Length: 208
Image 1 (cartoon, rainbow, N blue to C red):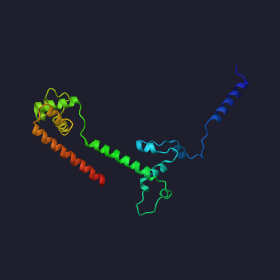
Image 2: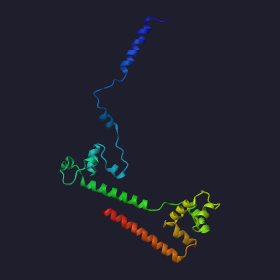
Image 3: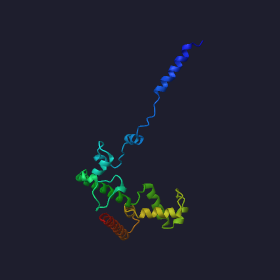
Image 4: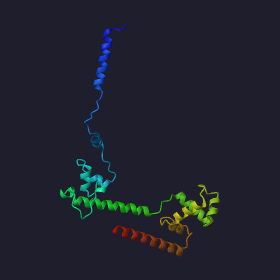
């Protein structure tokens, strides 16, 4: 049996739930609230170490000598920015960060110059093909041990990568007695010359 008070209690519960609903605040600046909740993610270790979380992103970047917005960079003959006038830039910290970043870039470029590393099985596979077929890449592609089903072009690229790598070709071929001493010496000189030329080119780019 339904009592008269049941409907009143139900209506009261509805009113309570309505009051508990979150009301939309039109006066709130949504963009500011969103930016406040965002955290600055820093992937570069040297910047992360000197980053001051109590300061804004703009101030931190200014202290490190970095520009927050690239489209605001002014030519040297224009007036100084407000950031510069207030002496926010810490020159010692800025120099250390820049030098560290340059060192990281230099190491990264040096790593990219080296040929890709090859596994022991890859090197054994390439050596076998070279010993069996010389430079006949078509014959290599038809060899029963061509487990990777490489095409002649793919085999040529693999062998070139192996021969251009100073870590593998000359030392391994010389060790197995498959490369005459004079030829090995000649190839070593060519590779050393290439290496010096690459280093010289890199240094000239850095100076410029």
